[in-house]
Image (tube, rainbow, N blue to C red):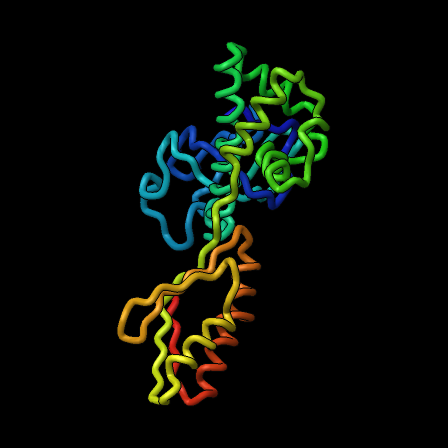
Length: 256
């Protein structure tokens, strides 16, 4: 990766490291996001409980997500922890780095097409971006969402145009989906009409349904925003189910 920060990290910051050396009671790792910086993970900070051998948890060259415990600026020592990183923090950090790699790949492609040095082009493009953003992918995502203008970083037109095109092609946010099976059962004479009215109450461009047979329907709720999907689930699907149940019907939705 091209990405690197200057100076020292902050205490409690979650970072990606590469294991460089393993000793009997400690592990040393390079801080991927801080060029030239390394830290130490004491054996007690590898995992909870008794550890027989560190190689059961880490290997040289392995990428690990760590938490900054303490920094001694005068000595340049950085204490790290592996066990204090929650699964959610680890997952979010890895996802963040994947997004950054995806953004950097765009610059590599442009550099190759223009026969430019990728590192130099990266520095040229990001020199103004990092005054307002922590990561390149955040700026690219804002461009896709029309919350930022590529002209704000004042690039040469020969770079700006292909860069903008590639950002819009490759940085499209993935859709968030709620998927499940809805089972509707009613013995009323007007059951078909009740089912039609039930689906009319959840009518929305982000909601689709498909009849599977036997009173079962496949339901899909899609959007680019997780909160929007969850809101549609509660305001549309749950209300439609409540309507059907009040009309002396049985409804059951099972999320996939």
